[in-house]
Image 1 (cartoon, chains in turn purple, yellow):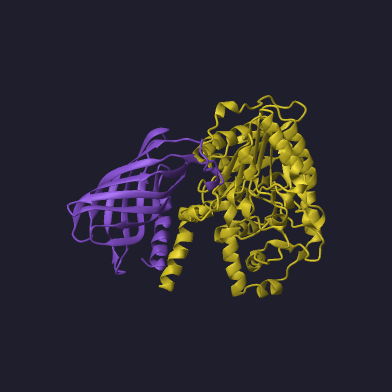
Image 2 (cartoon, rainbow over the protein chains, first blue to last red):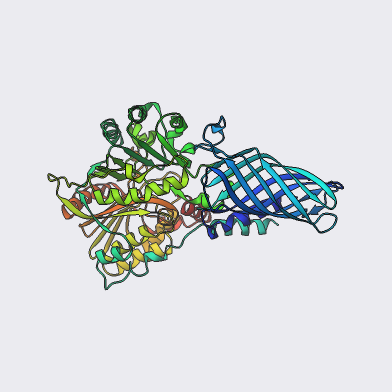
Length: 170
Length: 416
């Protein structure tokens, strides 16, 4: 995916923030995936709904669309995903406070969901993800090196989101 | 592709902006209503307030504020747009940390651009992040970071309030930041500004009722509204005046309606220290309507070496504003004061500049006090600035109607 396209999509998404309420937000991620027959690198954009602010097992819903280029530099939309994320716990006792200016919580999460894959052939898939390095403020989440995997009739694929930033609009 | 990018970028910026139309719409402009009714309809409730004590010297305010913090018994709330430690203001910050260590809750809110202070303060700046390692409850609003660029137009909203509350009894509003150039510098490096200290249980309550949930929405450092007591007994030695406290959150338009109501209610005179006067069409219209009614509108504009405010001099002069510009040669600090006096009776003071950014894109806290004797004192202060400033001719103003000044004006309109 070209830088210009990425910037344009970012601008479009960020311009929409006035539509959202606080528990609702959007995210941008840079990720890549290796499938049984191909590999791609690009970005994912999605929406998040977090109805609660629980300290343990806090759920949120997400939908996302991945896009990027494959090994032949062809632009493609590998998958659309919807699922639920559970923050396992939230703690302020961690050594990563330096990440942000304001106090930031450590709240690793796991995700499960359904995917509609568009690579090779259109087909459903199961989605599994984890964010072992997820940090949050009431209005912003930072996630780094989040692995994910999917399973469809073409077998397993796996990938990593290098970073994922989520802004919960106020 | 480039054109599309520019269009999208402009759309992105504009989507974050807010209309100022309510300054010239009902109830602000309703001629059948008195000022009090207009403010009430705008949701700005009347409070009682003692006559403010004004601090025009940053160094005096620094000493006084340090003393206020040092003597606090119950809690301290400090909010500022730009705030940073430096050798010159370290006594204040030492007092803040010491007070928190004594067990008195201290809440400190600062805007995220404070770390990127581009004034003279940048040569003295010690970031306040160290407060996170102290018992001070510290919050930076809208931090500026690469990750947060995805916040988009929300990054345009800045926290511009300067509110001080000590023990629920003393409140101060004004234009002074808590950084070197506002309160720590000396001579021409020190900005000329003002802070107004008063007692007003109603204003304190209104602010805290908003502040506590707002803080909890932005920080994991949860605070409890019940822990903020308010001293409700009026000071018998200091008679109270009618006043209105304006707590503007971007989008609630309280400030627009307060200014609009004051301007549309003026009968004789309006004196304004606007700081950066990047007015939009509605603000100009409000002033023009007052001038057309026969109201004398006077304005003193700070000398800004960037000259980014000069594009608007011509329309201000053309609508009849008696506008004066501070002399470039005057060896004085930047005039950073914000003030409006109406009919020698109402005084509006606080953090808000008379410009688009303050009206639409910033958190601001200001107050209007109905006090003719206080207004006369403030008018004299204004008149001194007015007498020392120089008139701007129409020919001179026309020279500043250039493309580069227009672009700077646009930048200042959004950027402040």
